[in-house]
Length: 170
Image (cartoon, rainbow, N blue to C red; front, side, top):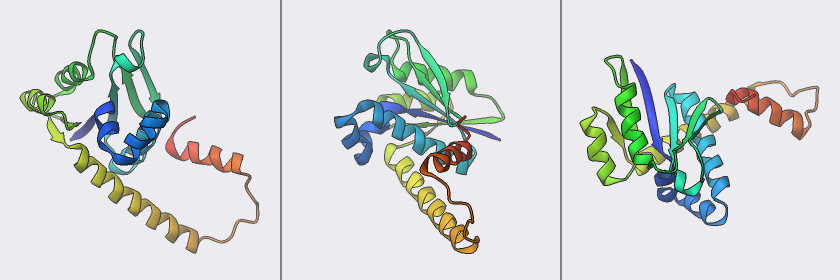
Protein backbone atom coordinates (compact mmCIF):
# COMPACT_ATOMS: atom_id res chain seq x y z
CA UNK A 1 0.00 0.00 0.00
CA UNK A 2 1.20 3.51 -0.85
CA UNK A 3 1.11 6.06 1.94
CA UNK A 4 0.78 9.77 1.28
CA UNK A 5 1.06 12.40 4.00
CA UNK A 6 -0.48 15.76 3.19
CA UNK A 7 0.72 18.43 5.62
CA UNK A 8 -1.19 21.64 6.37
CA UNK A 9 1.97 23.76 6.39
CA UNK A 10 0.99 26.87 8.34
CA UNK A 11 -1.15 24.86 10.75
CA UNK A 12 1.84 22.69 11.66
CA UNK A 13 4.19 25.71 11.87
CA UNK A 14 1.74 27.37 14.27
CA UNK A 15 1.44 24.22 16.39
CA UNK A 16 5.10 23.20 16.78
CA UNK A 17 6.84 25.41 19.36
CA UNK A 18 10.25 25.65 17.63
CA UNK A 19 8.66 26.45 14.26
CA UNK A 20 6.22 28.93 15.82
CA UNK A 21 9.14 30.79 17.44
CA UNK A 22 11.07 30.77 14.17
CA UNK A 23 7.97 31.98 12.27
CA UNK A 24 7.75 35.02 14.54
CA UNK A 25 11.24 36.05 13.38
CA UNK A 26 11.33 34.70 9.80
CA UNK A 27 8.34 32.98 8.17
CA UNK A 28 10.38 31.78 5.19
CA UNK A 29 12.93 30.13 7.50
CA UNK A 30 10.08 28.39 9.39
CA UNK A 31 8.71 27.03 6.08
CA UNK A 32 12.17 25.82 5.07
CA UNK A 33 12.71 24.14 8.44
CA UNK A 34 9.34 22.33 8.17
CA UNK A 35 10.29 21.13 4.68
CA UNK A 36 13.65 19.85 5.98
CA UNK A 37 11.96 18.01 8.87
CA UNK A 38 9.43 16.46 6.49
CA UNK A 39 12.27 15.42 4.14
CA UNK A 40 13.87 13.50 7.01
CA UNK A 41 10.48 12.01 7.89
CA UNK A 42 9.94 11.02 4.23
CA UNK A 43 13.37 9.43 4.00
CA UNK A 44 12.76 7.35 7.10
CA UNK A 45 9.05 6.51 6.66
CA UNK A 46 8.91 6.11 2.87
CA UNK A 47 5.73 8.21 2.74
CA UNK A 48 5.16 10.55 -0.20
CA UNK A 49 4.99 13.98 1.45
CA UNK A 50 2.99 16.95 0.15
CA UNK A 51 3.06 20.21 2.12
CA UNK A 52 0.32 22.73 1.35
CA UNK A 53 0.71 26.42 2.26
CA UNK A 54 -2.04 29.05 2.02
CA UNK A 55 -1.54 31.67 -0.67
CA UNK A 56 -2.46 34.59 1.58
CA UNK A 57 1.08 34.60 2.95
CA UNK A 58 2.67 34.34 -0.51
CA UNK A 59 0.65 36.27 -3.08
CA UNK A 60 0.34 35.25 -6.69
CA UNK A 61 -0.50 32.25 -8.79
CA UNK A 62 -0.35 28.68 -7.58
CA UNK A 63 3.21 27.43 -7.19
CA UNK A 64 4.21 23.77 -7.01
CA UNK A 65 7.80 22.75 -6.41
CA UNK A 66 9.86 19.90 -5.07
CA UNK A 67 12.54 20.22 -2.41
CA UNK A 68 14.38 17.21 -0.95
CA UNK A 69 11.78 14.95 -2.68
CA UNK A 70 9.02 16.74 -0.74
CA UNK A 71 6.26 18.30 -2.84
CA UNK A 72 5.47 21.87 -1.80
CA UNK A 73 2.28 23.61 -2.94
CA UNK A 74 1.39 27.27 -2.45
CA UNK A 75 -2.32 27.54 -3.26
CA UNK A 76 -3.85 30.02 -5.67
CA UNK A 77 -4.75 33.35 -4.05
CA UNK A 78 -8.45 32.47 -3.95
CA UNK A 79 -7.90 28.97 -2.54
CA UNK A 80 -7.25 28.00 1.09
CA UNK A 81 -4.91 25.22 2.14
CA UNK A 82 -7.94 23.37 3.57
CA UNK A 83 -9.69 23.44 0.19
CA UNK A 84 -6.58 22.23 -1.62
CA UNK A 85 -5.98 19.45 0.92
CA UNK A 86 -9.55 18.21 0.46
CA UNK A 87 -9.10 18.21 -3.34
CA UNK A 88 -5.82 16.31 -3.03
CA UNK A 89 -7.42 13.76 -0.70
CA UNK A 90 -10.11 13.12 -3.33
CA UNK A 91 -7.70 13.07 -6.31
CA UNK A 92 -5.10 10.79 -4.72
CA UNK A 93 -7.42 8.37 -2.94
CA UNK A 94 -7.69 4.85 -4.32
CA UNK A 95 -7.60 1.24 -3.11
CA UNK A 96 -3.83 1.08 -3.10
CA UNK A 97 -3.23 4.43 -1.41
CA UNK A 98 -3.81 5.51 2.16
CA UNK A 99 -4.00 9.28 2.60
CA UNK A 100 -2.93 10.79 5.93
CA UNK A 101 -3.46 14.49 6.65
CA UNK A 102 -1.42 16.30 9.29
CA UNK A 103 -3.46 19.12 10.79
CA UNK A 104 -4.98 20.25 14.04
CA UNK A 105 -7.72 22.19 12.24
CA UNK A 106 -10.94 20.68 13.62
CA UNK A 107 -13.14 21.63 10.64
CA UNK A 108 -10.64 20.21 8.18
CA UNK A 109 -10.47 16.98 10.17
CA UNK A 110 -14.14 16.25 9.54
CA UNK A 111 -13.83 17.06 5.84
CA UNK A 112 -10.88 14.70 5.38
CA UNK A 113 -12.56 11.88 7.31
CA UNK A 114 -15.35 12.14 4.73
CA UNK A 115 -12.78 11.52 1.98
CA UNK A 116 -11.49 8.38 3.72
CA UNK A 117 -8.24 10.00 4.83
CA UNK A 118 -6.70 9.48 8.24
CA UNK A 119 -5.81 12.43 10.43
CA UNK A 120 -2.56 12.95 12.27
CA UNK A 121 -2.63 15.82 14.75
CA UNK A 122 0.22 18.31 14.83
CA UNK A 123 1.28 16.93 18.22
CA UNK A 124 1.27 13.31 16.95
CA UNK A 125 3.35 14.24 13.92
CA UNK A 126 5.81 16.18 16.08
CA UNK A 127 6.20 13.15 18.35
CA UNK A 128 6.83 10.87 15.32
CA UNK A 129 9.35 13.33 13.86
CA UNK A 130 11.20 13.59 17.19
CA UNK A 131 11.36 9.78 17.51
CA UNK A 132 12.76 9.52 13.98
CA UNK A 133 15.29 12.31 14.66
CA UNK A 134 16.52 10.43 17.75
CA UNK A 135 16.83 7.20 15.75
CA UNK A 136 18.76 8.99 13.01
CA UNK A 137 21.09 10.61 15.57
CA UNK A 138 21.67 7.22 17.21
CA UNK A 139 22.39 5.55 13.85
CA UNK A 140 24.76 8.36 12.83
CA UNK A 141 26.61 8.07 16.14
CA UNK A 142 26.99 4.29 15.71
CA UNK A 143 28.24 4.73 12.13
CA UNK A 144 30.68 7.46 13.18
CA UNK A 145 32.07 5.27 15.96
CA UNK A 146 32.53 2.29 13.59
CA UNK A 147 33.95 4.03 10.54
CA UNK A 148 37.64 4.72 10.16
CA UNK A 149 38.66 8.32 10.42
CA UNK A 150 38.69 9.88 6.97
CA UNK A 151 42.11 10.55 5.56
CA UNK A 152 40.60 13.30 3.43
CA UNK A 153 39.45 16.33 5.42
CA UNK A 154 36.19 17.75 4.05
CA UNK A 155 35.47 21.44 3.96
CA UNK A 156 32.11 22.61 5.29
CA UNK A 157 31.09 23.38 1.69
CA UNK A 158 31.79 19.81 0.49
CA UNK A 159 30.09 18.33 3.57
CA UNK A 160 27.01 20.45 2.76
CA UNK A 161 26.99 19.15 -0.84
CA UNK A 162 27.12 15.56 0.45
CA UNK A 163 24.26 16.30 2.85
CA UNK A 164 22.13 17.65 -0.04
CA UNK A 165 22.86 14.48 -2.02
CA UNK A 166 21.85 12.37 0.98
CA UNK A 167 18.49 14.15 1.13
CA UNK A 168 17.94 13.82 -2.60
CA UNK A 169 18.22 17.55 -3.36
CA UNK A 170 20.36 18.43 -6.32
